[in-house]
Length: 139
Image 1 (spheres, one colour):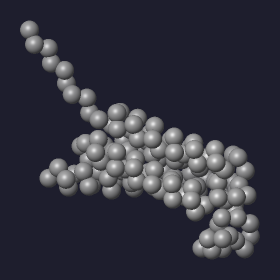
Image 2 (cartoon, helix red, strand yellow; image 1 turned 60 degrees about the vertical axis):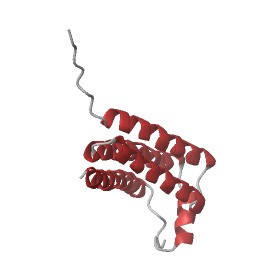
Image 3 (cartoon, rainbow, N blue to C red; image 1 turned 135 degrees about the vertical axis):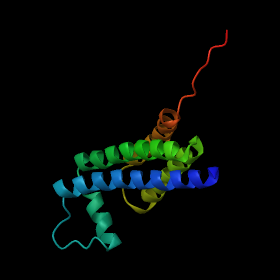
């Protein structure tokens, strides 16, 4: 049953991560909407839109990745009952970030910052998400 719990932890963790990132992106789109007539299903138009975003918008999305990665890894660790689930969530986030860096134009600093976020928030999320073992004193 441990494997089922770990799989569930990964799924729940990824859902939490995705929701946090979607909220950050929704905030960005609220304050920096795409130009009228932009087809968000046309990848070339999406790439142009992302390339035109100001620093503030990039920072909001980056903050969403930070919060989302921590929350997703923490939740995955707790729900999965193991750091394994949390590390899988973090690894999947890193893979998604690498994919995004390849297909969506973004500044190099943003890519580097996001990779650092995925790694550090995975470590933090698993450490904080791991239940502490009760220490017993023997006399």
